[in-house]
Length: 579
Image (tube, rainbow, N blue to C red; front, side, top):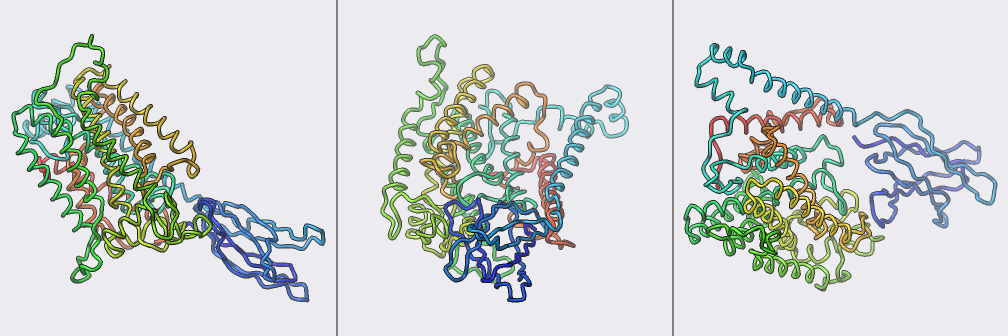
C-alpha cells in the first residue's frame, strides 16, 4: 500500500545520487534514497529500481557523486502500485542534464473502496429511512401488532419513534435539568458520531493517511474526534451539574463524585494503554502514564470543579430588557473565565518562554529532519521537555506520529502534561455551550445564533493565530501539542456541528440521531471495549492481502459497525456503564 515502483536510468558518464523529500515535510532535509552508477563506456544506460511513497507529492533531486552538486530536480505525485521511469540524460548543452518522468504502467485508484463503502452505507441509511416512514402507517402498525406481542411491538416502535425513557444520571451523559424530564438527544448523537469515527480511525481507517493522525502541523479526520469528545464532555458537565443542584444534591457530595469519577477514568486509561494481556507481566519501567482516558479524567476534574464553584442552585431569570441580558450566560460565570484565562497564560508562558536545553526557546517543531535537521532532539519543544523531565522517557509514548514524515528520534506524548491545559480550555468552551442551553432552554432562536457567534469568533481567532496557513502562523494547528489554535479551530467546528445536530434532532426532529445516538449513550463502554478487544475476532481477522486498502477498510468498517450494533443492543436492554 501507498507505494510505487521507480526505475532510474542514468545515461551520464558519472554516478548520480538520488535524494527524496516529501512536500508534506516542512523545511526538511532531502534524504538519500540510493546511488545510480555511471553509464559504462559502451554507452549502455544503467538502471536502478527504487520504491517510493505515494501518500504525498515528492521532490526528487539528483546530485553528482563527485562534487555532490544538484544536477536536476523533479516534483511528482506517484500513484499507488504504479510503475515509473526517471531518465537522466546528457544534453551536451550548458544546462548539462535533463530529467524526464515516464509512466510505464498506470497506478490503481486506491480511493474506490471509500466510494463503494459510502454507497453501501448510504443505501442502508435510505432503506432505514424508508422503513421508518412505512412503519408509521396505520396499516403496518396494525400488522405488527397482530404478528407479535403487543408490548414487544410497541417497544420496538417506540425505540425509534418515541422519546426514550428518562435514565439515571451518568457522568458522560448530557442531561437537561430534571424539571424538563427529557434528554438532549442531539448531544448524545454528536458524542456518538465522534466516538464512531474514533473507533474507526483507531482500528486503522483502512490504512489511508487522512484517517491517521497528522504527522505534525495540520489536520486529518483522525485529529477531529478527541477534541470533540472533550468539548461534548464539557457541555455534559454543565447540564448534569445544574440538574443535580436543582434537585438539591449537596455540593460536597458532587465534589466526591467528581474526584471518584476522575480517578476511575485515569486508572482505566492506564490499564487500556498498557495492554500486556498475552505478553507476560507488565514492567513498571516502561509503564506509559499519559493517555486518552487519563486526559479526559484530568480535564473532567478541572472543569467540573470550576463549574461547581460558580454554578447556581437556581438559574437567574433576567429580564430581556436588562442591558447585559445577551451575554449573561458568560458574565454570570466570570470567576471561572478568569481561572481559564490564567491557565492559558501559564500555557503560553511555558510554551514560549521556558528554556529547553539545546533547543531554541519557543520551539514548536517536530525535531528529526524538520527545520533542516538543526533540532533533531527538540520534538515538541517545551511540551516534550516537560513530559520527559516529569515522567521520564520510558513512561511516555514511544512512537509519535512525527516519526512517519519527520523521522523524529525522541519519545513524545500527544496526551502529555502541558497539552492538558488546553484540553481544559476545550472542555470549558463546551461548558459554555451547556450554559447557553441552560439559560435559553427551548428558545431555539436564542440558542442557535449564539452557537454560530461563538463558532465565528473562534474561527477568527484561529485565522489570526495560524495566518490561514498550515506551517507559517504564529501558533500552527497541531494535535500533538494541543496548540491554542488547534483548540480554537476544533471548538469552532464543534459549535457549528452542534448547531446542525441540535436543529435536525431536537428542533425539527427530522432525524432520531440513529445510529450514532446509541454509542453516544454508552461511550465509555464502547471506547474501552474497542481498545481491549481490538485484536480479537470478529474485530480482526487474517486478510488474504494485507497490502490492500479495500480489505483493511472492509475489516475496520465491519469492526466499527459491530460496536454500533452492540451499543444498540445494550440501549434496548437499558444497560449503561456509568462511572
